[in-house]
Image (tube, rainbow, N blue to C red; front, top):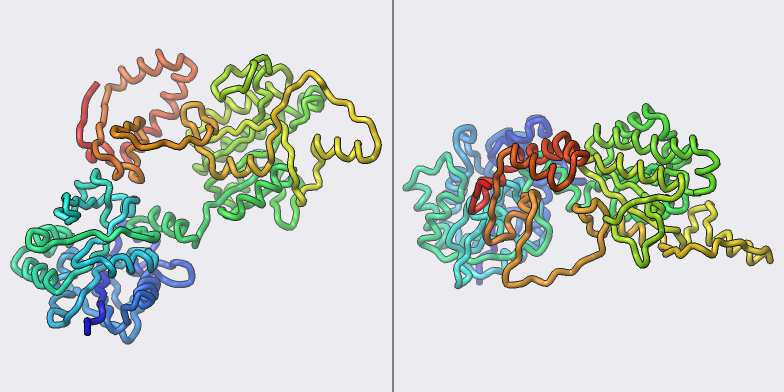
Length: 531
Protein backbone atom coordinates (compact mmCIF):
# COMPACT_ATOMS: atom_id res chain seq x y z
CA UNK A 1 0.00 0.00 0.00
CA UNK A 2 1.44 3.33 -1.07
CA UNK A 3 2.11 6.00 1.52
CA UNK A 4 -0.18 9.01 1.63
CA UNK A 5 1.38 12.20 0.24
CA UNK A 6 2.70 14.89 2.54
CA UNK A 7 3.20 18.62 2.18
CA UNK A 8 5.73 21.11 3.53
CA UNK A 9 4.73 24.80 3.62
CA UNK A 10 7.64 27.24 4.00
CA UNK A 11 6.37 30.17 6.07
CA UNK A 12 9.37 31.51 8.01
CA UNK A 13 9.99 34.72 6.01
CA UNK A 14 9.01 38.18 7.18
CA UNK A 15 7.77 39.62 3.85
CA UNK A 16 9.79 42.86 3.95
CA UNK A 17 8.30 44.06 0.62
CA UNK A 18 4.84 44.12 2.19
CA UNK A 19 5.48 45.40 5.71
CA UNK A 20 2.85 48.13 5.49
CA UNK A 21 0.13 45.66 4.45
CA UNK A 22 1.09 42.97 6.96
CA UNK A 23 1.04 44.91 10.22
CA UNK A 24 3.41 42.43 11.85
CA UNK A 25 1.71 39.30 10.49
CA UNK A 26 3.51 36.70 8.35
CA UNK A 27 2.66 37.11 4.66
CA UNK A 28 0.63 33.90 4.57
CA UNK A 29 -1.82 35.49 7.03
CA UNK A 30 -2.99 38.00 4.43
CA UNK A 31 -6.74 38.03 4.09
CA UNK A 32 -7.95 36.22 0.98
CA UNK A 33 -11.70 36.47 0.95
CA UNK A 34 -13.14 34.76 4.00
CA UNK A 35 -9.87 32.97 4.75
CA UNK A 36 -6.14 33.66 4.88
CA UNK A 37 -3.64 32.49 2.28
CA UNK A 38 -2.46 29.81 4.70
CA UNK A 39 -5.99 28.63 5.50
CA UNK A 40 -6.67 28.45 1.77
CA UNK A 41 -3.61 26.23 1.28
CA UNK A 42 -4.70 23.87 4.03
CA UNK A 43 -8.20 23.66 2.58
CA UNK A 44 -7.02 22.94 -0.97
CA UNK A 45 -4.39 20.41 0.13
CA UNK A 46 -7.10 18.56 2.07
CA UNK A 47 -9.36 18.63 -1.00
CA UNK A 48 -6.53 16.97 -2.91
CA UNK A 49 -6.17 14.15 -0.39
CA UNK A 50 -3.34 15.47 1.81
CA UNK A 51 -4.50 15.18 5.40
CA UNK A 52 -3.76 17.92 7.94
CA UNK A 53 -1.69 15.55 10.03
CA UNK A 54 0.58 15.13 7.01
CA UNK A 55 1.16 18.85 6.54
CA UNK A 56 4.27 20.46 8.06
CA UNK A 57 4.64 24.24 8.36
CA UNK A 58 8.06 25.82 8.81
CA UNK A 59 7.50 28.97 10.88
CA UNK A 60 9.79 31.78 11.93
CA UNK A 61 8.78 35.43 11.76
CA UNK A 62 5.81 36.19 14.06
CA UNK A 63 5.16 32.47 14.43
CA UNK A 64 2.74 33.16 17.30
CA UNK A 65 0.43 34.85 14.78
CA UNK A 66 0.23 31.83 12.48
CA UNK A 67 -3.14 30.09 12.55
CA UNK A 68 -2.16 26.46 12.11
CA UNK A 69 -4.64 23.61 12.73
CA UNK A 70 -3.85 21.67 15.89
CA UNK A 71 -3.54 18.39 14.01
CA UNK A 72 -0.89 19.79 11.64
CA UNK A 73 2.83 19.84 12.43
CA UNK A 74 5.07 22.84 12.94
CA UNK A 75 8.81 23.31 13.05
CA UNK A 76 10.50 26.62 13.83
CA UNK A 77 13.37 28.25 11.99
CA UNK A 78 14.83 30.20 14.91
CA UNK A 79 17.36 31.83 12.58
CA UNK A 80 14.81 33.19 10.08
CA UNK A 81 16.31 36.71 10.24
CA UNK A 82 19.73 35.58 8.96
CA UNK A 83 18.78 32.64 6.72
CA UNK A 84 16.72 32.12 3.58
CA UNK A 85 14.26 29.34 2.82
CA UNK A 86 16.96 26.84 1.82
CA UNK A 87 17.67 26.52 5.54
CA UNK A 88 13.95 26.23 6.31
CA UNK A 89 13.71 23.44 3.76
CA UNK A 90 16.69 21.67 5.32
CA UNK A 91 14.98 21.76 8.72
CA UNK A 92 11.77 20.39 7.22
CA UNK A 93 13.40 17.56 5.29
CA UNK A 94 15.53 16.61 8.27
CA UNK A 95 12.44 16.33 10.48
CA UNK A 96 10.71 13.93 8.07
CA UNK A 97 13.77 12.01 6.87
CA UNK A 98 12.35 8.72 8.16
CA UNK A 99 8.89 9.00 6.58
CA UNK A 100 8.04 7.39 3.27
CA UNK A 101 6.17 8.59 0.23
CA UNK A 102 6.12 11.78 -1.83
CA UNK A 103 6.28 15.27 -0.36
CA UNK A 104 5.05 18.53 -1.87
CA UNK A 105 7.07 21.64 -1.06
CA UNK A 106 5.16 24.91 -1.36
CA UNK A 107 5.85 28.55 -0.60
CA UNK A 108 3.34 29.92 1.89
CA UNK A 109 2.54 33.02 -0.16
CA UNK A 110 0.96 31.09 -3.04
CA UNK A 111 -2.64 31.36 -4.16
CA UNK A 112 -3.71 28.43 -6.33
CA UNK A 113 -6.55 26.12 -7.27
CA UNK A 114 -6.91 22.43 -6.47
CA UNK A 115 -6.44 21.53 -10.15
CA UNK A 116 -2.78 22.58 -10.03
CA UNK A 117 -2.08 20.55 -6.89
CA UNK A 118 -3.77 17.54 -8.46
CA UNK A 119 -1.63 17.95 -11.59
CA UNK A 120 1.51 18.00 -9.45
CA UNK A 121 0.44 14.93 -7.48
CA UNK A 122 -0.41 13.07 -10.69
CA UNK A 123 2.95 13.79 -12.31
CA UNK A 124 5.38 10.88 -12.42
CA UNK A 125 8.33 11.11 -10.04
CA UNK A 126 9.95 14.34 -8.88
CA UNK A 127 8.32 17.31 -10.59
CA UNK A 128 8.15 21.08 -10.68
CA UNK A 129 4.81 22.84 -10.93
CA UNK A 130 5.19 25.19 -13.87
CA UNK A 131 3.08 27.66 -15.76
CA UNK A 132 3.32 29.31 -19.14
CA UNK A 133 1.76 32.35 -17.49
CA UNK A 134 3.77 34.73 -15.32
CA UNK A 135 3.25 33.74 -11.69
CA UNK A 136 6.17 35.70 -10.30
CA UNK A 137 7.21 39.16 -11.55
CA UNK A 138 10.78 38.41 -10.50
CA UNK A 139 10.80 35.70 -13.12
CA UNK A 140 11.99 32.22 -12.19
CA UNK A 141 12.29 30.13 -15.31
CA UNK A 142 12.49 26.39 -15.88
CA UNK A 143 14.81 24.87 -18.50
CA UNK A 144 13.66 21.55 -19.94
CA UNK A 145 15.70 19.26 -22.23
CA UNK A 146 14.46 17.27 -25.21
CA UNK A 147 13.38 14.38 -23.00
CA UNK A 148 11.09 16.61 -20.95
CA UNK A 149 13.47 16.63 -17.97
CA UNK A 150 14.19 19.77 -15.96
CA UNK A 151 17.87 20.63 -16.08
CA UNK A 152 17.86 24.05 -14.38
CA UNK A 153 15.68 26.47 -12.45
CA UNK A 154 16.55 30.14 -12.02
CA UNK A 155 15.72 33.79 -12.49
CA UNK A 156 17.96 33.95 -15.56
CA UNK A 157 15.83 31.42 -17.41
CA UNK A 158 12.63 33.41 -17.97
CA UNK A 159 13.17 33.27 -21.74
CA UNK A 160 12.31 29.57 -21.75
CA UNK A 161 8.61 30.36 -21.60
CA UNK A 162 7.98 28.24 -18.50
CA UNK A 163 7.82 29.72 -15.02
CA UNK A 164 8.41 27.83 -11.81
CA UNK A 165 5.26 28.22 -9.75
CA UNK A 166 7.06 27.77 -6.40
CA UNK A 167 5.74 24.28 -5.75
CA UNK A 168 7.54 20.97 -6.33
CA UNK A 169 7.11 17.29 -5.57
CA UNK A 170 9.97 15.28 -4.07
CA UNK A 171 10.25 11.50 -4.12
CA UNK A 172 12.04 9.65 -1.33
CA UNK A 173 15.21 9.58 -3.42
CA UNK A 174 14.89 13.30 -4.19
CA UNK A 175 14.60 14.05 -0.48
CA UNK A 176 17.66 12.00 0.36
CA UNK A 177 19.71 13.69 -2.37
CA UNK A 178 18.52 17.18 -1.51
CA UNK A 179 19.02 16.81 2.24
CA UNK A 180 22.52 15.48 1.66
CA UNK A 181 23.33 18.51 -0.52
CA UNK A 182 21.84 20.93 2.02
CA UNK A 183 23.79 19.48 4.94
CA UNK A 184 27.11 19.31 3.12
CA UNK A 185 26.91 22.73 1.46
CA UNK A 186 26.65 26.30 2.70
CA UNK A 187 23.17 27.28 1.50
CA UNK A 188 21.71 28.89 4.60
CA UNK A 189 21.41 32.34 2.98
CA UNK A 190 20.20 31.04 -0.38
CA UNK A 191 16.79 30.54 -1.91
CA UNK A 192 16.16 26.81 -2.14
CA UNK A 193 16.49 26.72 -5.94
CA UNK A 194 20.29 26.95 -5.48
CA UNK A 195 20.64 23.51 -3.83
CA UNK A 196 17.77 22.23 -5.98
CA UNK A 197 19.85 22.91 -9.10
CA UNK A 198 22.62 20.78 -7.63
CA UNK A 199 20.07 18.05 -6.93
CA UNK A 200 19.09 18.09 -10.63
CA UNK A 201 22.57 16.74 -11.38
CA UNK A 202 21.68 13.62 -9.40
CA UNK A 203 17.95 13.25 -9.93
CA UNK A 204 15.57 13.43 -12.91
CA UNK A 205 12.72 15.90 -12.57
CA UNK A 206 9.74 16.42 -14.83
CA UNK A 207 7.20 19.21 -15.11
CA UNK A 208 3.56 19.42 -14.12
CA UNK A 209 1.68 22.13 -15.98
CA UNK A 210 -0.48 24.26 -13.67
CA UNK A 211 -4.10 23.59 -14.58
CA UNK A 212 -5.79 26.27 -12.55
CA UNK A 213 -5.04 29.81 -11.49
CA UNK A 214 -1.83 30.36 -9.54
CA UNK A 215 -0.23 33.59 -8.29
CA UNK A 216 2.77 34.14 -6.05
CA UNK A 217 2.07 37.03 -3.69
CA UNK A 218 5.47 38.68 -3.38
CA UNK A 219 4.45 42.35 -3.40
CA UNK A 220 1.46 44.54 -2.69
CA UNK A 221 0.62 44.68 -6.41
CA UNK A 222 0.80 40.87 -6.55
CA UNK A 223 -1.68 40.78 -3.67
CA UNK A 224 -4.13 43.02 -5.52
CA UNK A 225 -3.64 41.02 -8.71
CA UNK A 226 -4.21 37.71 -6.94
CA UNK A 227 -7.47 38.88 -5.38
CA UNK A 228 -8.71 39.97 -8.79
CA UNK A 229 -7.58 36.74 -10.51
CA UNK A 230 -9.49 34.68 -7.97
CA UNK A 231 -12.55 36.93 -8.01
CA UNK A 232 -12.12 38.16 -4.45
CA UNK A 233 -11.82 41.73 -5.63
CA UNK A 234 -12.81 43.15 -8.99
CA UNK A 235 -11.41 46.04 -10.96
CA UNK A 236 -13.19 49.22 -10.00
CA UNK A 237 -15.01 50.89 -12.91
CA UNK A 238 -16.66 54.30 -12.75
CA UNK A 239 -19.30 55.06 -15.38
CA UNK A 240 -19.80 58.80 -15.67
CA UNK A 241 -23.25 59.27 -17.16
CA UNK A 242 -24.73 55.88 -16.36
CA UNK A 243 -28.41 56.75 -16.57
CA UNK A 244 -28.73 57.04 -20.37
CA UNK A 245 -29.57 54.54 -23.09
CA UNK A 246 -25.97 53.34 -23.49
CA UNK A 247 -24.98 53.98 -19.86
CA UNK A 248 -27.59 51.73 -18.27
CA UNK A 249 -26.73 48.89 -20.64
CA UNK A 250 -23.00 49.44 -20.03
CA UNK A 251 -23.55 49.22 -16.27
CA UNK A 252 -25.57 46.04 -16.67
CA UNK A 253 -22.92 44.27 -18.80
CA UNK A 254 -19.76 45.51 -17.08
CA UNK A 255 -21.13 44.64 -13.64
CA UNK A 256 -20.76 40.97 -14.55
CA UNK A 257 -16.98 41.35 -14.67
CA UNK A 258 -16.12 44.46 -12.64
CA UNK A 259 -17.03 46.40 -9.52
CA UNK A 260 -19.07 49.16 -11.16
CA UNK A 261 -20.14 52.53 -9.80
CA UNK A 262 -22.14 54.98 -11.88
CA UNK A 263 -23.21 58.60 -11.84
CA UNK A 264 -26.11 60.71 -13.02
CA UNK A 265 -26.89 64.39 -12.65
CA UNK A 266 -29.40 64.13 -9.78
CA UNK A 267 -28.35 60.82 -8.30
CA UNK A 268 -30.49 57.76 -7.58
CA UNK A 269 -30.52 54.83 -5.14
CA UNK A 270 -27.76 53.07 -7.13
CA UNK A 271 -25.99 56.03 -8.77
CA UNK A 272 -23.83 58.84 -7.37
CA UNK A 273 -25.05 62.39 -7.94
CA UNK A 274 -22.50 64.25 -10.02
CA UNK A 275 -22.36 67.45 -12.01
CA UNK A 276 -19.24 66.70 -14.08
CA UNK A 277 -18.92 70.34 -15.13
CA UNK A 278 -17.87 71.06 -11.54
CA UNK A 279 -14.26 69.94 -11.25
CA UNK A 280 -14.32 69.77 -7.44
CA UNK A 281 -17.21 67.30 -7.55
CA UNK A 282 -15.34 65.08 -10.03
CA UNK A 283 -12.19 65.05 -7.90
CA UNK A 284 -14.19 64.32 -4.73
CA UNK A 285 -15.96 61.37 -6.37
CA UNK A 286 -12.68 59.91 -7.63
CA UNK A 287 -11.34 60.12 -4.09
CA UNK A 288 -14.33 58.08 -2.87
CA UNK A 289 -14.49 55.46 -5.65
CA UNK A 290 -10.76 55.32 -6.54
CA UNK A 291 -11.55 53.83 -9.96
CA UNK A 292 -9.12 51.67 -11.90
CA UNK A 293 -11.06 52.41 -15.10
CA UNK A 294 -13.32 55.34 -15.97
CA UNK A 295 -15.84 55.28 -18.81
CA UNK A 296 -17.07 58.71 -19.91
CA UNK A 297 -20.58 58.56 -21.36
CA UNK A 298 -21.50 62.20 -20.72
CA UNK A 299 -22.23 64.43 -23.66
CA UNK A 300 -24.73 66.35 -25.71
CA UNK A 301 -25.23 64.13 -28.74
CA UNK A 302 -27.99 65.87 -30.68
CA UNK A 303 -26.26 67.90 -33.45
CA UNK A 304 -29.16 70.34 -33.74
CA UNK A 305 -29.22 70.94 -29.98
CA UNK A 306 -25.45 71.48 -29.98
CA UNK A 307 -25.76 74.08 -32.71
CA UNK A 308 -28.56 75.98 -30.99
CA UNK A 309 -26.91 75.87 -27.54
CA UNK A 310 -23.18 75.94 -28.21
CA UNK A 311 -22.20 77.02 -24.70
CA UNK A 312 -23.88 74.04 -23.06
CA UNK A 313 -22.54 71.70 -25.78
CA UNK A 314 -19.01 72.94 -25.09
CA UNK A 315 -19.47 72.45 -21.36
CA UNK A 316 -20.77 68.87 -21.70
CA UNK A 317 -18.57 67.70 -24.56
CA UNK A 318 -15.30 69.48 -23.79
CA UNK A 319 -15.10 70.96 -20.28
CA UNK A 320 -16.41 67.76 -18.72
CA UNK A 321 -13.70 65.82 -20.53
CA UNK A 322 -11.04 68.21 -19.25
CA UNK A 323 -12.24 67.66 -15.68
CA UNK A 324 -12.36 63.87 -16.06
CA UNK A 325 -8.91 63.73 -17.65
CA UNK A 326 -7.43 65.81 -14.84
CA UNK A 327 -8.94 63.43 -12.28
CA UNK A 328 -7.75 60.34 -14.21
CA UNK A 329 -4.24 61.76 -14.31
CA UNK A 330 -4.28 62.50 -10.58
CA UNK A 331 -5.64 59.06 -9.60
CA UNK A 332 -3.81 57.04 -12.29
CA UNK A 333 -7.10 55.79 -13.76
CA UNK A 334 -7.44 54.53 -17.32
CA UNK A 335 -10.04 56.48 -19.31
CA UNK A 336 -12.38 54.97 -21.89
CA UNK A 337 -13.98 57.86 -23.72
CA UNK A 338 -17.09 57.45 -25.89
CA UNK A 339 -16.75 59.55 -29.04
CA UNK A 340 -18.61 59.58 -32.36
CA UNK A 341 -18.29 59.06 -36.12
CA UNK A 342 -19.26 62.72 -36.48
CA UNK A 343 -15.56 63.57 -36.18
CA UNK A 344 -15.38 62.56 -39.87
CA UNK A 345 -16.79 64.59 -42.75
CA UNK A 346 -18.74 61.78 -44.41
CA UNK A 347 -17.14 62.36 -47.81
CA UNK A 348 -15.26 59.06 -47.96
CA UNK A 349 -16.70 56.24 -50.05
CA UNK A 350 -16.73 53.14 -47.92
CA UNK A 351 -15.94 52.59 -44.25
CA UNK A 352 -13.74 54.96 -42.29
CA UNK A 353 -10.55 53.76 -40.65
CA UNK A 354 -9.50 54.93 -37.22
CA UNK A 355 -6.56 56.93 -38.56
CA UNK A 356 -8.49 58.73 -41.32
CA UNK A 357 -8.43 62.52 -41.20
CA UNK A 358 -10.97 64.00 -38.80
CA UNK A 359 -12.86 66.83 -40.50
CA UNK A 360 -16.15 67.38 -38.69
CA UNK A 361 -18.83 69.37 -40.50
CA UNK A 362 -20.94 70.53 -37.58
CA UNK A 363 -20.43 71.98 -34.13
CA UNK A 364 -21.21 68.69 -32.40
CA UNK A 365 -18.42 66.97 -34.33
CA UNK A 366 -16.01 69.81 -33.51
CA UNK A 367 -16.64 69.49 -29.78
CA UNK A 368 -16.07 65.72 -29.92
CA UNK A 369 -12.85 66.24 -31.89
CA UNK A 370 -11.60 68.67 -29.23
CA UNK A 371 -12.46 66.11 -26.57
CA UNK A 372 -10.52 63.37 -28.39
CA UNK A 373 -7.44 65.59 -28.48
CA UNK A 374 -7.70 66.18 -24.73
CA UNK A 375 -8.12 62.46 -24.02
CA UNK A 376 -5.18 61.56 -26.29
CA UNK A 377 -2.81 63.42 -23.99
CA UNK A 378 -3.49 60.89 -21.23
CA UNK A 379 -0.96 58.05 -21.10
CA UNK A 380 -3.69 55.46 -20.43
CA UNK A 381 -6.77 55.96 -22.56
CA UNK A 382 -9.10 54.38 -25.08
CA UNK A 383 -11.29 56.29 -27.55
CA UNK A 384 -14.38 54.46 -28.79
CA UNK A 385 -16.14 56.09 -31.75
CA UNK A 386 -19.73 54.92 -31.95
CA UNK A 387 -22.31 55.66 -34.64
CA UNK A 388 -26.04 55.93 -34.14
CA UNK A 389 -27.17 53.36 -31.57
CA UNK A 390 -30.06 50.94 -31.47
CA UNK A 391 -31.14 48.08 -29.29
CA UNK A 392 -33.35 47.06 -26.40
CA UNK A 393 -32.71 48.39 -22.94
CA UNK A 394 -35.44 47.73 -20.41
CA UNK A 395 -33.62 49.75 -17.74
CA UNK A 396 -33.55 52.99 -19.71
CA UNK A 397 -36.44 55.33 -20.21
CA UNK A 398 -34.44 57.54 -22.59
CA UNK A 399 -35.92 57.55 -26.12
CA UNK A 400 -33.71 56.82 -29.11
CA UNK A 401 -34.05 57.67 -32.78
CA UNK A 402 -35.32 54.18 -33.50
CA UNK A 403 -37.76 54.09 -30.59
CA UNK A 404 -39.18 57.46 -31.68
CA UNK A 405 -39.68 56.14 -35.22
CA UNK A 406 -41.41 53.01 -33.94
CA UNK A 407 -43.63 55.01 -31.57
CA UNK A 408 -44.57 57.52 -34.26
CA UNK A 409 -45.37 54.88 -36.85
CA UNK A 410 -47.31 52.86 -34.28
CA UNK A 411 -49.39 55.91 -33.44
CA UNK A 412 -50.05 56.65 -37.11
CA UNK A 413 -47.85 59.74 -37.16
CA UNK A 414 -45.66 60.58 -40.13
CA UNK A 415 -41.89 60.39 -39.75
CA UNK A 416 -39.55 62.88 -41.40
CA UNK A 417 -36.04 61.58 -42.05
CA UNK A 418 -32.90 62.91 -43.70
CA UNK A 419 -32.41 61.02 -46.95
CA UNK A 420 -28.87 62.28 -47.55
CA UNK A 421 -27.12 60.30 -44.80
CA UNK A 422 -25.82 56.76 -44.92
CA UNK A 423 -25.38 55.50 -41.34
CA UNK A 424 -24.13 52.25 -39.87
CA UNK A 425 -26.10 51.70 -36.67
CA UNK A 426 -24.45 49.86 -33.79
CA UNK A 427 -26.18 47.57 -31.32
CA UNK A 428 -25.64 48.91 -27.80
CA UNK A 429 -24.79 45.42 -26.53
CA UNK A 430 -21.95 45.16 -29.06
CA UNK A 431 -20.57 48.53 -27.98
CA UNK A 432 -20.57 47.41 -24.35
CA UNK A 433 -18.89 44.09 -25.16
CA UNK A 434 -16.33 45.95 -27.29
CA UNK A 435 -15.42 48.18 -24.35
CA UNK A 436 -15.03 45.08 -22.22
CA UNK A 437 -13.35 42.69 -24.63
CA UNK A 438 -12.02 44.18 -27.88
CA UNK A 439 -8.39 44.71 -28.81
CA UNK A 440 -6.87 48.15 -28.19
CA UNK A 441 -4.79 49.41 -31.09
CA UNK A 442 -2.01 51.48 -29.52
CA UNK A 443 -0.99 52.82 -32.89
CA UNK A 444 -4.16 54.77 -33.45
CA UNK A 445 -5.36 54.88 -29.87
CA UNK A 446 -8.65 53.27 -30.76
CA UNK A 447 -10.42 49.95 -30.86
CA UNK A 448 -9.36 47.76 -33.72
CA UNK A 449 -10.96 44.74 -35.29
CA UNK A 450 -10.39 41.43 -33.62
CA UNK A 451 -7.42 39.67 -35.21
CA UNK A 452 -6.60 35.97 -34.98
CA UNK A 453 -2.90 35.29 -35.44
CA UNK A 454 -1.60 31.88 -36.47
CA UNK A 455 1.91 31.23 -35.17
CA UNK A 456 4.57 30.94 -37.87
CA UNK A 457 8.09 29.54 -37.85
CA UNK A 458 9.35 33.00 -36.86
CA UNK A 459 7.18 35.47 -34.96
CA UNK A 460 8.50 38.97 -34.19
CA UNK A 461 6.87 41.28 -31.64
CA UNK A 462 8.06 44.88 -31.39
CA UNK A 463 7.51 47.65 -28.88
CA UNK A 464 8.67 48.89 -25.50
CA UNK A 465 5.93 47.04 -23.66
CA UNK A 466 6.29 43.75 -25.53
CA UNK A 467 8.76 42.78 -22.79
CA UNK A 468 6.40 43.52 -19.93
CA UNK A 469 6.80 41.01 -17.04
CA UNK A 470 3.50 39.42 -18.08
CA UNK A 471 4.90 38.71 -21.56
CA UNK A 472 8.68 38.43 -21.35
CA UNK A 473 8.71 34.76 -20.42
CA UNK A 474 7.00 33.78 -23.68
CA UNK A 475 9.87 34.54 -26.07
CA UNK A 476 12.78 32.43 -27.27
CA UNK A 477 14.95 35.47 -27.97
CA UNK A 478 14.69 39.00 -26.59
CA UNK A 479 16.56 41.93 -28.13
CA UNK A 480 16.86 45.31 -26.43
CA UNK A 481 17.68 48.37 -28.55
CA UNK A 482 19.05 51.53 -26.93
CA UNK A 483 19.55 55.00 -28.37
CA UNK A 484 20.61 58.40 -27.08
CA UNK A 485 17.96 60.94 -25.97
CA UNK A 486 19.11 63.24 -28.78
CA UNK A 487 18.63 60.61 -31.48
CA UNK A 488 15.31 59.56 -29.99
CA UNK A 489 14.07 63.16 -30.00
CA UNK A 490 15.16 63.73 -33.61
CA UNK A 491 13.42 60.55 -34.79
CA UNK A 492 10.16 61.42 -33.01
CA UNK A 493 10.20 64.95 -34.46
CA UNK A 494 10.70 63.60 -37.98
CA UNK A 495 8.06 60.91 -37.59
CA UNK A 496 5.33 62.71 -35.64
CA UNK A 497 5.83 66.45 -36.13
CA UNK A 498 6.29 69.26 -33.56
CA UNK A 499 2.91 68.99 -31.81
CA UNK A 500 3.11 65.29 -30.98
CA UNK A 501 6.86 65.60 -30.33
CA UNK A 502 6.00 67.88 -27.39
CA UNK A 503 3.56 65.30 -26.01
CA UNK A 504 6.19 62.58 -26.34
CA UNK A 505 8.80 64.62 -24.52
CA UNK A 506 6.51 65.82 -21.72
CA UNK A 507 4.28 62.79 -21.19
CA UNK A 508 5.17 59.53 -22.89
CA UNK A 509 8.95 59.40 -22.63
CA UNK A 510 9.00 60.09 -18.84
CA UNK A 511 6.39 57.36 -18.37
CA UNK A 512 8.35 54.97 -20.55
CA UNK A 513 11.52 55.71 -18.58
CA UNK A 514 9.62 55.06 -15.36
CA UNK A 515 8.51 51.72 -16.81
CA UNK A 516 12.10 50.71 -17.60
CA UNK A 517 13.16 51.83 -14.13
CA UNK A 518 10.43 49.76 -12.49
CA UNK A 519 11.07 46.63 -14.55
CA UNK A 520 14.68 45.65 -15.36
CA UNK A 521 13.75 44.67 -18.90
CA UNK A 522 17.21 45.31 -20.38
CA UNK A 523 18.87 42.89 -17.93
CA UNK A 524 16.43 40.13 -18.92
CA UNK A 525 17.06 40.44 -22.66
CA UNK A 526 19.44 38.12 -24.48
CA UNK A 527 20.99 40.76 -26.77
CA UNK A 528 21.48 44.49 -26.21
CA UNK A 529 22.38 46.88 -29.06
CA UNK A 530 22.98 50.62 -29.15
CA UNK A 531 21.57 52.22 -32.31
